[in-house]
Amino acid sequence: MKITKETVRGKQGYRLHILPTTKYKTVSVIAKFKAPLKREGITERALLPHVLHKATNNHPNVRLLQSALEDLYGTGFSSDGSKKGENHVLSFRMEVVNESYLNESEPILEKALNIFHDVLFNPKVEGNGFDEAIVKREIQTLEQKITSIKDDKMSYANLRLIDHMCEGEPYSLHVHGYLDDLKKITAKSLYQHYLEMIENDVLDVYVIGGIDESEIETLMDRTFTRAKSDNQGEHLESEPIHPAESKEIVEQEEVKQGKLHIGYRTHIKFGDEDYYALQIFNGLFGGFPSSKLFVNVREKHSLAYYAASRFESHKGLLLVFSGVDPKDYDQAKSIILEQMEAMKQGDFSDDQVTDAKEQVVNQLQETMDNANGLIEVLYHQMLSGSTIQSDELMENIRNVTKEDVVKVAEKIELDTIYFLTSQEGGEA
Image (cartoon, rainbow, N blue to C red; front, top):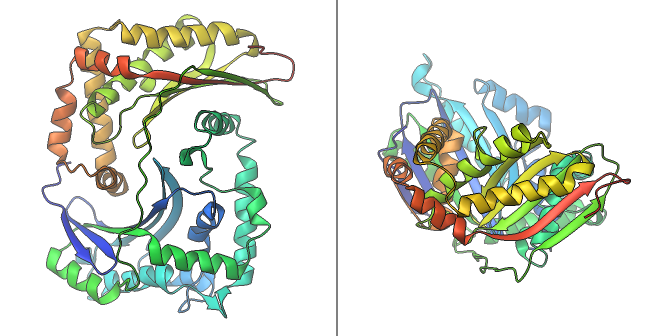
């Protein structure tokens, strides 16, 4: 999908991004609140999206709020939190039917935006705090989510890898927060954190669909205000870290299948010149079923139940995931490290580079064919300060050469090897 125009307008307290396109039958509105990752308040921030979209002063319980959304032709609403480099981003998403496809003249979008605004800026407040029953219920839900991470051993191993690899860095902080914090949170204390978010976070609002720019700007001016913030919050950039030597950590849990996860420093972020070659590197190394990790670790040697890699676009990390039998730890580790060395030596063909480029382009096109996916790509650009049209993005990927990929590989440094194994086996 080619986006011919993204109009960005500075508003009172936020940036408004307007993306007119006839591709979708719905209009998507996404608000993203960004603040630096900090240990203090991270659990409260993780809780806020869930509390906010349960009730507003105009729709004082979840049933009434949900009913109001359903009355607008099943308007959908969701929210979550994520880490983008050293930043904590809270996202609120609304998808509403495009009025031009309806026979009625009812202002569906304007009504939906009023609700969207209420969720963000007019939540249900009792005295100096949120609704206590809602907060208690959402604390229980978040507690279950945090606890359940340990039951998903792949997610848990990745969490522990980042704990060790990024110790002392903001990126090591847990995006869902911490159990110990939940005991201290009250409806009043959470409301104070909400006020800080409204006051200090950088806010970007995206509207995409079959919309008229001037009409949507007028509509947003009428329904969407944020008078308290200058939208100039603190922005954290991580300092480059070159590990003096790699770490190897073995931890034991009740697991049947060992989790061998490895972390590398790429020193490449979204917007960097080498970023496009990094995408191809990852495809060749562990991103696709034809990759070195999949073919050599899983298929050729039958050492892994799964073996793959992914990279973090704003922190400069490359992460390897594999599930192995504890007795195969040493051999699997050696073969994974050998695949990285093979990439540094250019042990792959031009044809493989061409195939990887086409797969990366297809993957990106699929992402951008979805409204939420397209907004994520554009938000990545906003965070990095690098603005590029979609056709240029694809062209840069297609221009990557084998030499570019080798250059990227040579920059990558091993940081941490982490193995989660059974009580009986897996000695390092």
